[in-house]
Length: 295
Image (cartoon, rainbow, N blue to C red):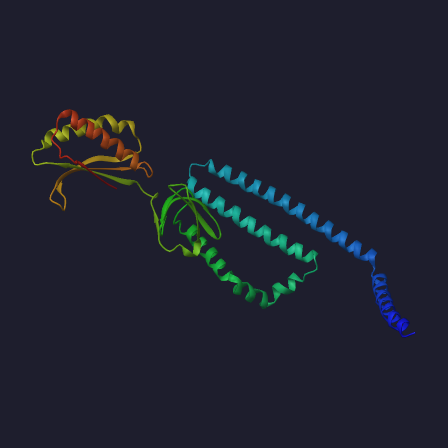
């Protein structure tokens, strides 16, 4: 008889638990729950499609507007590219904000109450929003002061290269070796813009006291008359500066010219090669190591 009592007690407990579970399951309004789930899912799908279309249409309108203004000769292309990139980024961030706001509202999160309260801002600052604000403010002043534009060659800290994009948070600079550097705007303190004005090309040709300077000048003048008309990127010069002394006591003959930014290295190499070939052909006396290049 005790055996029957021991086995009956667990069975009764299981039955009670099952009854509680059944009563709980039957108390749920499954129709309302399913309807709410389907409605929320449809709203999320509708919002996603709506914001996707707004994103496509908005970016298309922005690109078309800037394409129209790029045809104007009164506006610099680099400047327009910078404003275009910044506008696209601002539009994307704004669209993401409203999409998340609408999504949270559909899920029943009281977004308005959270935004109205000061706690959400304190939390955002604690999570690093202060750096984000610094990035935006610095990016605004970079654009307002025209420190650099997309396409400019700049040196920011240890990074030197071409600016490919200016965003609300970061500036992208592609180095000469192809490396793409993402620089937070708040870390940009000193910028060296190498694209704003014509660049100087200085050529120093080492000579000896026995060098016939008159012959050297005539040979270089002949080279200049032949090459300068072929290169409209040369905006000033070549100008013969004459003979000067280096710190080690050697003599050099200097030639300087100014070219459009980006072409200085090509022009320098071209004229140096032409000078060297012409001087050697004319038999002008030069030291064993005749050339020193300086930009």
